[in-house]
Length: 457
Ligand SMILES: Cc1cc2nc3c(=O)[nH]c(=O)nc-3n(C[C@H](O)[C@H](O)[C@H](O)COP(=O)(O)OP(=O)(O)OC[C@H]3O[C@@H](n4cnc5c(N)ncnc54)[C@H](O)[C@@H]3O)c2cc1C
Image (cartoon, rainbow, N blue to C red; front, side, top):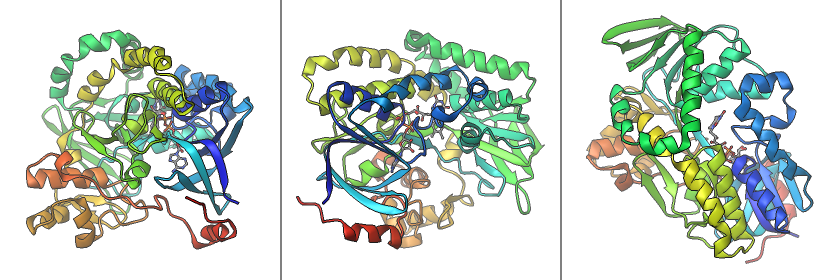
């Protein structure tokens, strides 16, 4: 028998946990699937398993995640950590893998709360061993209290870069330098959004405090860096760049990159839902109504997967979606919408200030953009010269986007590069057509499905 549930939530971060909490409080029954071994999503990763010392290192915002854990004790919840969803159909049948076996469940309503992923930061040498993302380093810190013994150079832009630097510092890691790539003109253009951002002054205060902590630690900080190149024979040895009008070279054994996060739209794309190009965040977001419902009735998206909003706003969106998914009246969402508007006041300022530099959005010809299939930016431009109009055609020309990550890493870069070469917006160029399975599945995992009945409908 194929299992059926009233409400299925994919993702156990702030959006998914808050959605479950609201639905359960209204008497609903919820199944919550999440890839991670414990609750919390990205920001509160491993929150149920960290001791006081590690919480201190990770800071007060991280510790706040404990407030979401109460939901796991509620009646009516079936929480299934360690489960990877690899297909969601428009008829609300969900395929996932748990303990090495594929499973299937159908649902009346689905809330997709699959969050964000780090925006790739392609430049010459970014694929060398010894180069990884700041987020990956933070995962090791949150999950195991592990950090590299050798010093790290952090390069890129965005509030998360500063947060991770302060967390590493608190953990006793050595930071050799911060190479900040935020373009100088961003500070001017972001100013126009500052008055609105003052409504969320708390975020500004946190940014100032993190900057002061890093300054006090005496970490060399290069601003307005551009022309980045990572060099090394077998692994990264040197980071070369220009800052303050001067060429620079830093010896480095570990290079951590970050330039913001973008919505993880693999599932919503695989459902062929409408997506809009967000020119401010330079990413795609699924088109939703005021509750977070998609064009497919009964399928909702909440949190960073619907556009980057941060943890608090993600939780509010999760609650809104859960209200609608449990048939709340129109008026019941009003207080949440007011709270959401306050939380979102900071976004235009942050989006403008930390808009990535063009050299990382549309890298030079020699830079690999599709890491799985080793396709360089110049090859994509060559495809355009011989008639390729969009990302789907690049698959036929060079297999870009056809590796195990299914275009998750290179998708935005390929759209940007084609847009640049054609002289149009990425919104006009479009995105890869994502097909399930959105994560790799083995034959032996699939074999378990043969033992289950085919879902009806
Ligand atoms: C690497 C990384 C680190 C971050 N660290 C911080 C931080 O320290 N502080 C901060 O303020 N913000 C951080 N952010 C931003 C932060 O993710 C969000 O603001 C907030 O967590 C969004 O909440 P969410 O519930 O929408 O998504 P998330 O918290 O990302 O939760 C989504 C959950 O869905 C799960 N999931 C995704 N796809 C599937 C699937 N196919 N099957 C099953 N489960 C799936 C994920 O494993 C995850 O647990 C980070 C983002 C990233 C990408």
